[in-house]
Amino acid sequence: MSSSVARVLTFAAVCLTGASNIAHAQLIESPLDSEEAKEEGLPFRGSSFAFYQTLTGNSFTRGNQLSYNPTYAWGFDLSLLWHFNRRFQIILDQGLNIEITNSDTTLNRREPRLTDTTATFGALLLKQTFSPKAQFILNGSVGLNAPTSLASQAATMILGTRVGLSSTLSLPKVLQGLGLNLSLGYLHRFLEQNVVAVDVGYPCNAGTTSRELCSALGGSTNARFAFTGSVSGELAITEKWGLSASYTHSWRRGANLADFSYVASDGAVQSLGDGTLRHWRNINTIDITVTYFATGWLGLGASATSIFAERGPDSAVRPPFRPMDTYYGLNVNLRLDELYLTANPPPPKDDE
Image (cartoon, rainbow, N blue to C red; front, side, top):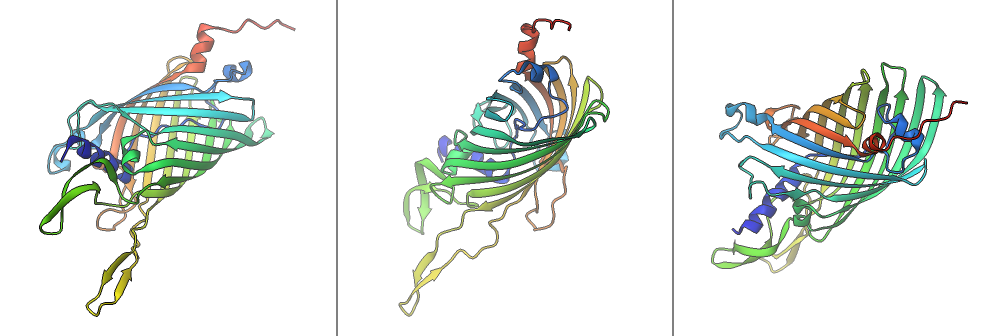
């Protein structure tokens, strides 16, 4: 098997199992957002560049798997926001991952791997202030996913389309600010094939004697659409320390297999439909992060993330924070709007 085929196989498997680093630009106003940036009306407020270091839970204990497989990776994420006004905004997001170790799934050590490029248009639908102690915000979004990752290319994705609805209840008087968030989303991926495929064919057995070049690969069918629900909270404990936690459940549906036709012993042509109930592959994500705001433009964080399937291979409910499903991270977040304000402070306002 060629290295290009092996590369596609691995990243297709990563995509199908949902074990990927996720970084999202927020469409909601948070009590941790910069008041200075809001007051100055910077059109790119909220833009950020993040650096992640991730180590799997298996790295700490040799006995978690049959073979010791430590995995240490770097991640980079650039989120560029542009606010047309106080109601409408657009977000461009691009991530890149590099595995530093040589784990069992490593193909080319330290090979940069792009995530899908995303573009999101967001709109403020409702902003209601109940009192100085409570505010409710509702946002809607539509977006596109471009297949720049190897996993999406192997899944023959042409384009991904997204719609979302998110809300937050902001309680600025709870410590230094508390935000309670709820979001719903739908992703539909337009695919050329219902199974993983590669551009360069490779020899495979077809029957007992013949061989041909194959482009479609075995395994689970490609995920075609997903519904996602998420609840989260973020608390500014002090001006320097923040705490956030989130839970996300994704109902993912794989593509159906094509009907299979065959000739029976009596000469009649029979057709078998897919008929399987195993195309639903639901994924849970739990994330807990502690952040220290060194400056207005620099945040340092430590996180624990558990990404796990709803059910294991034996169909039993899979518990969270198993070592093989858990990722520990150290994060650095650079707020580009805050950095701009630091380098270009606004002129002092005249006292009235």
